[in-house]
Every structure is written in structure tokens, then in C-alpha cells.
Image (tube, rainbow, N blue to C red; front, side):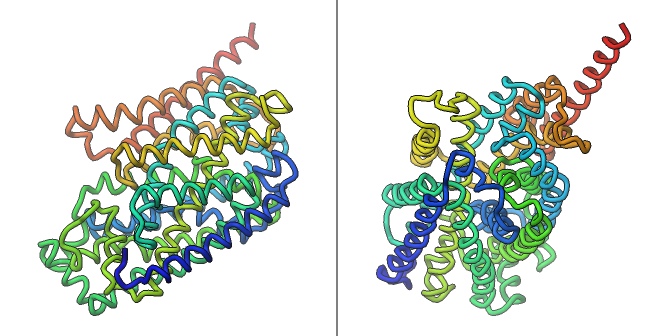
Length: 488
């Protein structure tokens, strides 16, 4: 725990934070009328709220703890990830958000897997997409639970087990109680806290180092490079770009991000996009250099680059007590704003898409069973934190690679054209799913080890390119077969 933070201050801030979460859960529970409302809040959420929610959901611990520390290993060029993320967010809102919002309402669907099933007229593809969501969400949630527990350890002085248990209890509690109504309002509140912390953390590091010039000079000495110019690139550029592209693909294809488009008021898309882009650019531009700037202040990494930000906060001489608590609260907010969204997405995937337990077909009412699945599934990644090792950025990048390779090609192809009720052939989507799902682990654990010349090519890039080609080839073959049948 940060020695400058008194236990009373840390606990007081935590209790205030929990009170806000409880209030949103209470209000969300009262506003929820049915299962559809539980997942998309009546499709009438304001642009400002959804924009902040999009930002807060994406940031997560992966950004404040993982990405902020990663520049230690890569150098100043790691900040290139900021514009990559912003371009990806703009593309997501511009080319996917509007069409997906319209078509999801026209088709009467409330989840991404359900949309795919309707767009491709394939119940089996809907179930396959849901299975991918359930599988790929586990490593992501493992990473975020880990980061959240590390933050709570610093805030309260608790050990890993009780910190993890408290995180689980809080985030699962308000998600179960309030659904998307609670989640989106909580995200907006958390997003404001994160914006303040994104400015406070790097500013404190630079001021502690005696100004930007002095901090960079100390960093260069610690990194044993020749001046500031030597800090531009320390690690592998291919891996760096792969991380950035994977993060961008997540904004374009990850269900927790796309679910925001199902719920936004149709007339508020431009406002939502502006809020999301501005907040993402502001935060990432400030946070990404933190790990590198900390090289002159930290001699030994206790938990790899994931531990840099917690170490800075634990020192007590970098940030004053109240500022440290603010940053820790922001880190906690970042983690919880991602966990709640993923749990909602997974519950819909299991309940509605995999099992088809709708309209009273399950053992309990649909809304009750949805809440049960949130509780049951959330235990899995929490346990994985305790039994498996894994870096935060690595785990979330792997998850993003799967989503990008499997979902991005069929999503883009299915949204083409102006007919919101149009159906696309399912065979290309199946081909893309199978090729993408196979390429991610094959490239990560096979090709990059066996063929040295291909090591700079990140699995994100390889799997996405392969998946797009697979979809295009299969679509052309399907069109040729359809044309041949018409000629007979």
C-alpha cells in the first residue's frame, strides 16, 4: 500500500465509490422492465453517456496499468498506439456504429451473436459466434480482474485474495442488479474520474523527475542509451504495431464495445463519436509514456511492466496522498467499467445464443437466468487470476486478436448496402470464423517460432489478413455457385 495513504482515507474513498455503484444499481434495477431493457436500455441512451461509456469500457486496467507501463520496454514510439486507437475508434463509430444501430433494431436483436445469426440467416453460426465470445472473454476478464485486484491492494492494504474477492463482489453485484442501465451510468461516472487521473499521473511523474527534460535525461541514463534519441525505440517495432492494431481491432469487433451501438439513441451518434474520440486521444496521449518515464525512478520491476504504475503509487513520493487515491480510484473504475460490460455480453451469449433459453424455455425466468449466468461465469476468470500467470497486455491482445480475426470480416461484409433486412450467405462467415480462430494460436505459438523471418509479423495482423482473404474467397465462390444455379 502507498505509505502516504492512510488506511482511513483509502477506505473512505472506497466506501464513497461503492455508494455510487450501489445507487446506480438501485436506479438501474428500477428502470429495467424486461430482458431487452436489461441489455440495451431501451435503445435510447444519450450520445454523451454512450461516448463516455465507450471510452471507459475500452480503457480498462489494460490501459492504466498494462499500456501505461509497456513503454518501459518499447520506448517513445509506443505513443504511436494513441493515434492508431483513435483512428480505429473513428472507423468503428463511422462505418459500423450507425449501420449496426439501425440493423439491430430492424432485426429486433440485442446481442452481437444474435445479429450475426439474423444477418446470415444461420442459427448455427449464431451459436458458434456465441461460443467464441464465451471463450475469448475469459482471458480478457482474467487480465482485468488481475489489474483491478492489484489496484485495490494498493488502495486498502489488503492481500491478493481478499482484494480479488471484493472486486468480484462489487462488480458482479451492481451488474446483476441494474443491467445495462446501471452499467452505462456507472461507466460515465467512472470515465470522468479516469480523465482526471489520466492527466494527474504523468504530470506527477514529470514533476517528480524535475521537469520533462530532466526526466527524459534520467530515463536515457537508466536505459543505457545515447540521449533522448535512443529512447525512440527500445523493443520490437513489429510487436509494438501488433499491439496497436490488436487494440484497434477490439474497438471494431469486440462485443463489449459494439454493444454500445445497440443502446444509443439513433440521433445521438455524432455526439457520441465526438466524446469517445476526444476522451481516448486525451487519455492515451498522456498515459502511454508513463512506463518509459518511470525508468529513471524504478530500478527493479516487481510484477513486470504491469507493476510499474502500482509501484509508482506505492512509493508515496511521486503523488501526494489525495492524488494517489484519485488515481487508484480511476484504476479501479477502469477495471470495473470493462468487467461489467463483458459480463453482460457473455450472459446474453450463453442464455440467448448458445442455449436458446428465451420465452420461458429455461429452468428459470429468462431475466433471472441471465443474472445467474453472470454470477457463474464471472467465477472462472477470477479463479484463473490465482492459478495462471499472464501479463495484462498480452492477455488482452490475444483476446483482441481472436475477436478481430473471427468477427471483423463478417461484420463489415454484413453491414454493406442500404437494406437493413438484407441477408448475407453464411458459408463465407463460417470460413472466416474457422480460419481466423485457427490462425491466432497457430501464428502466435507456431509460425513465429518456426520461421524467424516472420517473427516481426504479429498474430493479430496475420490472422486478420488471413481471415479477410478467407471470407473474400469464400464469398466469391458462393456467388459463383449461386450464379451457376440460376443459369440452370
